[in-house]
Length: 169
Ligand SMILES: [Cu+2]
Image 1 (cartoon, helix red, strand yellow):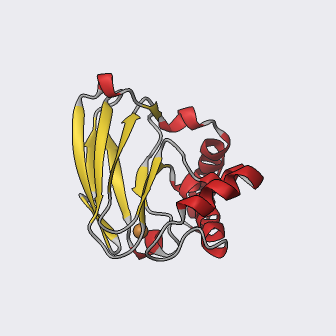
Image 2 (cartoon, rainbow, N blue to C red):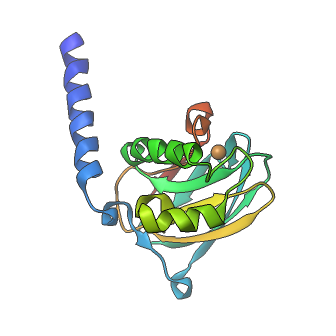
């Protein structure tokens, strides 16, 4: 029995590492507004999303209308679990640099940082970072069959349950 779990563990780790090293294409691509076939409203609270399960058809282009109804800064990021785990430390770095505080995003400082460290610019097409009471949009085309999750990588939030499952049918 123990050996069985060991195999499962090595298999899933191997799979995750494979997805991790794969290009962004593995999770889909930035969608075009003209191709949007469905709009999904996502509300952010401290620390969870509504809805907790997001149903999407393969190859569908979805417009996410995201609103932060909490009192903390939150992120809506579409990725695999392995990518989320890699992204977490980057967010921690933003906090250490003072770009990100629990309730604010210093966009000027973010722009300055961009020149010295492009990673800190933090504008990926698969994610959106919102201050409390702010609203934003993200258009994503789901061309991949990878196991995807929407999660918030602000330190501690994913662990607290700020994660929604994306069902691709
Ligand atoms: Cu959050």
